[in-house]
Image (cartoon, rainbow, N blue to C red):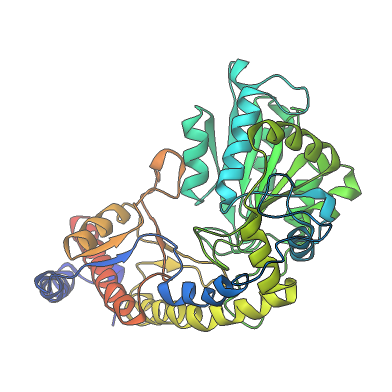
Length: 426
């Protein structure tokens, strides 16, 4: 078939009539399909069910060092869990603090504490006239929601195949003391799926911020979430920072939310000695300790980073066919028409999809009318405003594969319809 841009008006009209007839058939089916969030499927959650039996009938509820996990204390986490994350992140155990199930909660806390209490003696952000964050786009909507909640000005930074535009990052960070942070998902980025290159990581480490309390919020959520047997490799940000003596510039986050149970996992923050002392001082007032029973359960089930790697192979067996189903449909139905581009990630939870300029919102409307829910169009940009109205985040993980195939069929038809409407109007 011809590319749509090469068709005459008569050919476009004939194609529109055929595609619209198919779309009407989908609408008549009364579908109710959801591709809106990157949640683990029920089958993925089932993988971790044996973990619930690990502590059953046991009376040894003490972690290494003799701490009774049923009681208060051990603010920064039990040694077994800190050691597992030390292996995963290649960070010393003493530079890790364990939180509850959500790394997003730890990120929120870090921003909230900076707003109200300041970072290592710096003026609290709430007392400043202006605070700005850099936001690589397309990016993670919940990062943007945190900064918007606190009234922090968000500055979009364009993402490329190697990560954010580092020349633009450097220009802002090194010349504007109001720039206090940047959000990053450095491995299998949400939603593009790209992994930052070594040069990009080193460029972050080499930054010389105008603000002493500037921090890189390094959300390494997908560090073990591979989809192929040739996974991406991310340079350790702290190793890069040691070359420039800039370790204090980084907060790194990760969790087991998409490894074990999203609602009952473990999250951690890794940071330099100075940052860790500052964070612990604040957290000591906030809580007497995290849920150490859940920590012990994870430690005794996984044992070490190798145990997590083996477990993630089971996740890959469930997730990889879903990504392949989506990409195969896009390749067959849309790629020959010249109306879309999309990522082919090696890991993570998303596919980033770009329509013709000005068509993404219309695709969302058409999908919703036909019974398919997508991530809110525009959510991958600050304030929910995609200036080109092109980006859509596809989340293949949650639906059963047959439902996913049905949802992608509707999606492809909606993209074709929206593209034809634009081209005919032009």
